[in-house]
Image (cartoon, rainbow, N blue to C red; front, side):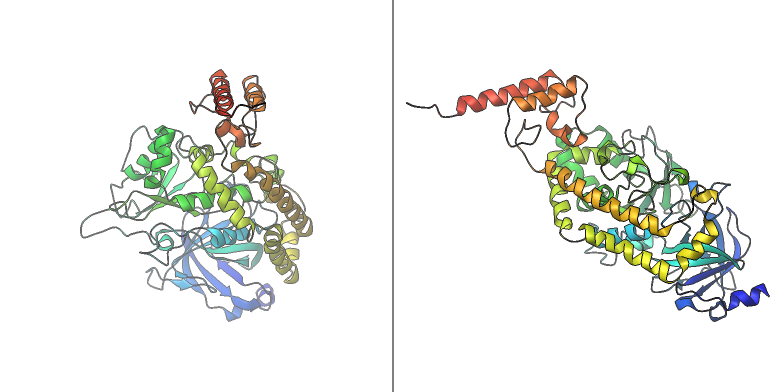
Amino acid sequence: MTTVFLAILFTLLPSVHLTGDFSNDYSEGTVVLCENGGPIATGTPMTAKIKWRGGYTNNPNMHKRNYSIKFHDENGEKVNRQLLDMRSDNHWILSAQNTEHSRLRNQVATELWRDINAKPYYSEKEPNAKLYVTSRMVEVYLNGEYRGIYQLSEAMDRKQMKLKKYDEEKGQIRGLLWNGKAQSEFVKMFKPFPHINNYTDSWYNYELEYPDLDDVCPTDWSTLDAAIRFVATSDDTSFITQLGNYFDVPVLVDYYVFCNVTMAFDNIAKNLKLGCYNQVKSPKITFALWDADVTFGGFYDPWQQHTPLAGPEVDFNANWNISNLFQRLNDNEPFRTKIHDRYYELRKTVFDPDSLKQRFSTYFDLLRQTRAAARDSAKWSGDSDVGGKILDFDSEEQFILNWIDRRIAYLDEYFKTYEPTMKGDVNHDGKVDASDINCIVSVITGDELPRKFAPRTDVNRDKQINTADISSIADIIRNSSSSAPSKTK
């Protein structure tokens, strides 16, 4: 009776039906995808290897699981499947968003990044290269049991980024892809690797994703090592003039602005894909977004869903997760100017608060109209996955819309301080005078200025805030006074 009932259950969201017994290891199962709210009977079973996936969200006490799906044919050979209107591929991801109470942050953030990010530096050679994945909201059933709202997405991999494949004829590693798996001084680029081991696919909290170590061993960590070493050890002059040799600067600026607007503090080191198109030709690294559910005021702890760390008026650059790469980008004037210009350019369009809010409202309306919100809430409210809370999609929408208004209002003022200014103008009031000296005195005596003022506070650029900076400002004031025309009677 239960099977017959489920076979006629309709939903306006696409539904994915998984059958099998799954764990942390891949095991056999079947997948049925029903488009346009069709019943299970309308879908064709597809054989696949399926497993749980994720970090924190894959802890033993979690109940709504993420899944990694790899399709194969009846002979066990991998086969590509085109799901909905996305790409044709063998590997697919079902993200539960189990600690994220709106179920939508990752979807909206991913689409926002798609709409703003610069093309990678090699786009003329690879016009179809993407630094984002396409995804769709679906509802999932596991062995006939309703499991709620999920995000079905492509995998961020070598194929998506169009990185050069391993050259088997020459035995040469060309394209490389890494992922930051956890916070560390190495992932945040404050320290270079102490040494390299090319016989492992996991190194100081980085994970090698391409080429697979089972296919190509030894691998080559030297390109990533050189980039991290540059960020960790270069002086400011070298950083400014040579950053573009190691990193895709236009994409880096876009990614910095994106993370600042969405407060994606869980994506600035960990959950960041780093890809090198072809290290034989260039060591330059570009960036791709992945797993952006901790955005727009969200948090990865379901018991503290909304956290001050992601507050709308919080200085992104003061966050404990900030990477040295982002910190140095923020601390050097030429890049601050690029950040300023890019933010205000996008502020006219995709960063307009009404535009950002509409993205969320459209999806919230979809979840309500299809009754997916009601079903998901009935299934998971009170569960430990959501911190024992009641899932209230209306309340969550209002929180996000309010957060967006406050965040953009804050950043509109914040990024004004990124405008180019004269040396010594610490408080950015257009002149160098005693008030700038007072700002530095405040820092020396223990009153920390917001980090946005830090590049101007270190007037003599010796990476210290002390009386030498006061002397530098005094010299600027004195020289300015001596060069001013004298008054005549």
